[in-house]
Amino acid sequence: MKKTLSTLGFLLLLLIGILYISEYNYLLRAVSKIYLTGHTTAYLSDYEGFDNHLLPASENPTSWPLHKEYNKVSLSEELEAYHKETQTVAFVLIKNDSVYFEKYYDGYGPDSKSNSFSVAKSIVSALLGRAIAQGHIQSLDQKVIDFLPELKGPYADQVTLGDLSSMASGQRWGEAYYSPLSVTTAAYFVEDLDQLILEQSIDEMPGKEYIYKSGTTQLLGMVLAQATGKNLTDYLYETLWDPMGAEYDSYWQVDSAQKGSEKAYCCIASNAKDFARMAKLYKDYGKWNGEVLLDSTFVAKSLNARFPESPEYGYGWWLKEYKGHNVFMMRGHLGQYVITFPEENLILVRLGHSKGPKGPKEDPFTPDIYRYMDAALELNPDAD
Image (cartoon, rainbow, N blue to C red; front, side):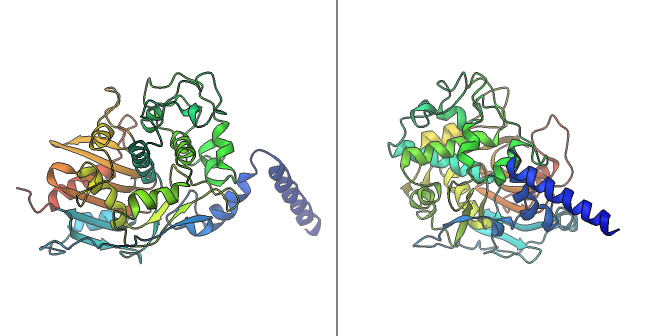
C-alpha cells in the first residue's frame, strides 16, 4: 500500500510538472480557483479568488427612486418555484426609472456583488461609443491594426472595430465554457491575456457574418486601452460609471496583478441595480439625466441587427422581438440578464447561479429568458 501511494504521489507530481511547463499550465490555476472549490465552471463569487481592479462607487452616488407601488405585488408560486430551481439571487423590476419590485435570495442583497460574466460585453461596446465620441477612435470603420499592428492572420489588416463589436471578426476562436482545454477556458486563467488573444489570428474574412466569440470582445478591450491610454476600469469609471451615479464599489477581474489586463469579455462584479444603469442609458439613447454620455446615433445602431440573418445581435447587445415588443438585453453565463422593454419603460434584472435546461439548439435564447420576459410583462403595472 505504501509503495502504491508513493507511486501515485510521484505520478501526480510528474503530471503537475508536465502541466507547469506545457501550454496548458493555466489548468493549475483552474483547479485551485474553480474545481477544488466544488464548481465545474466560473461562478458568481469567484472574483474573490482573482486579481481585480477596483471600480469605485460614484463620487455622487444616486439611488434609484422607489415606485409609488414599490413591492406591493407578489410573485406567483410558479415563478418563486422557478427562482428556487434556477437559484436566482436577484430579481429587480424597474418601471419608469423607479424600482417597482425587488427581491433577493440565497443571502444576497441590494449591495451584494456577483459576476456579470458576458453582461460586460455590452459595457465594453458602450466604451467604444464613448471613445469614438471623445475622438480617441475615428469610427466603427477604423481598422484594428491602427492600434494593434502586431495582430496576426491573413485578414488582420481588414478587421474593423465595428466587426469586433458586432461579433463579425473572423478571429480563430472556440467558444466552449466547460471544456478545460478550450481557448475560452484558457482566457479565464492565463496570466497574460493579451498574449493569448494576439495568438488568435484573423483567419477568415471579417464583416461577413455574426459568430459569437468572447475573444473578439477581448480584442476590442485591448484596442480601447491602446486608444485611450487608460485601463478599462478607469475609463469606464471616468466616462460612464461615475456620471451615472453608481451606488456601490465594484470590481473588474484582471488576468494578473502583474499584467493588469481586464477580462473585457466578462467579469465585472457588481450588483443588480448598478448593472441596470447601462440599460437605462441605452433606453434613453445615451442621455443620463440630461447629460449626453453616448451619441444617440451610436446607440440606435447598436440596438439594430447588423446582419439580417442574425437578428438576435446588434453591436454588443442582444435583440429580440417578443410578443409585439422590441427588447434589448445584456446576457451573461449562468443566467445574468438585464432585459429592457424600451416602449414600456421597463427594465428587468435577474442574476443567479443557473439558467436551467437548454432549449432548442437553433434558438439563440434559452427557455429561462422567455420565462423572465413573461414575468416582466405580467408584473408590468401598465399591462392591460
